[in-house]
Image (tube, rainbow, N blue to C red; front, side, top):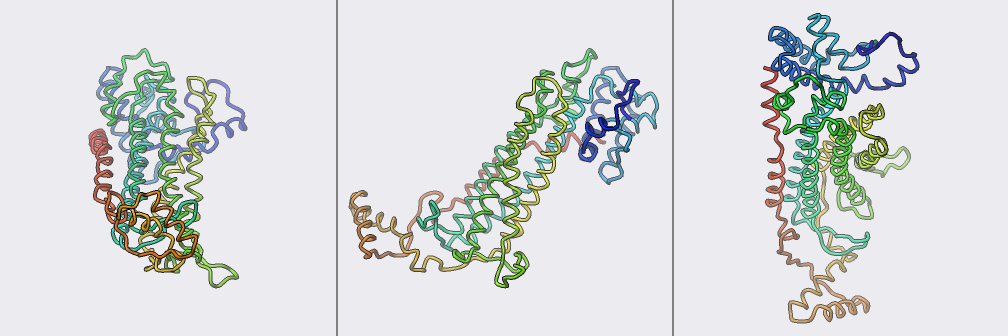
Amino acid sequence: MKLWQKDKSALAEVEKFTVGEDRAFDLLLAPFDVLGSIAHVKMLSRVGLLDAGEADLLVQELKHIYATTLDSQFVIREDVEDVHSQVELILTGKLGDAGKKIHSGRSRNDQVLVDIKLFLRYELEVLVREVKDCFDLLQTQSEKYKDHLLPGYTHLQIAMPSSFGLWLGAYAESLADDLLTVQSAYRVANKNPLGSAAGYGSSFPLNRRLTTELLGFEDLNYNVVYAQMGRGKTERIVAQALANVAATLARLAMDVCLYMNQNFGFISFPDELTTGSSIMPHKKNPDVFELIRSYCNQIQALPNEIAMMTVNLPSGYHRDLQLLKTHLFPAFQNLRDCLQMTCLMLSRMQVKEHILEDEKYRYLFSVEAVNRLVLQGVPFRDAYREVGRSIEAGTFSYEGELHHTHEGSIGNLCNDEIRSMMDKVLKGFPFDKVKAALEKLLH
């Protein structure tokens, strides 16, 4: 059933093709559709398009529908096209003509726009909290293992001494930067498109600033054509932010897969966190991290997928945009799963001690030998050549002591400063303001 349907029904094959998987994804949008409708009803009452009695009845019924969206009671009937239609049909069935008035001054275009913005805003907040949990664990493990040395590599060749504290702390700081891009995506999502209607506004005297305040948005999408053009652009920006977090996790997962390899042997995990082989009894495979790597690589492809789906669209709404949900929405859960599994694994990681005492790592200390000569007054280029000649002659000897004191080095990880950096990023999210606005809207 289409509330916008005219006299002729669509061919069944056309109906099936155009609706696709939309109902399933619309269930995710249901609570946000209701929130947008509550704000819209209150605004319609304020500008005189609904009387106070009608508005009160509609808001009360919408609050009841909202509760059903949170406990899995809300369903979209098979003969109903989308969540917007389902909500309006429930209202009309309960309240008659008052339910029919709720669509005044809006289109399904700006309804789905505001639903998606609210959904993305919510999902990004959940993601931020998951990233913060992973950040905290990385910092804890960085401090715990800051004195445990391991080889550092460039070009996959042994390069200079590193430490587990330095390694884990690097990924913590990476997540702090990743959240800067999540914050930018959040700010783009946190603008109100409601009232843009089909992309060209309305002749009704709508109060768009009021719905912005009621829904806790930071600001409006002012230009109504741009509000509609924001569909696709917003999703792409959000996808890029997800991809940045995913890139950090994928790189960490690749490191772990290498370090678990017997030829490295730097870390291990309890048997219950690894998998075996059907024919090789010695195997302890890093399946969890291999899947994290693959899921995260898939998420890194997402911005390009969305770009390719929207690259040649002119302004205005196009049905192509419907398919963005099928690509973007599952990515949030996949990324959360990867963050949670990363935390589970790293919390049980076992670190090998005294790795650098192995003779094969002696050349890691060549730079230390060069620097020691420089500190004795030898010019750097001469010191470099002297140590290089000793390596070629097989006479190089080394000391395993390290004296790194500058900011961010093995001996001065700056984890407190990195935590301050993360705290500053987190304070830039207006989560409390949004929560207060929505609580007020629902009470």
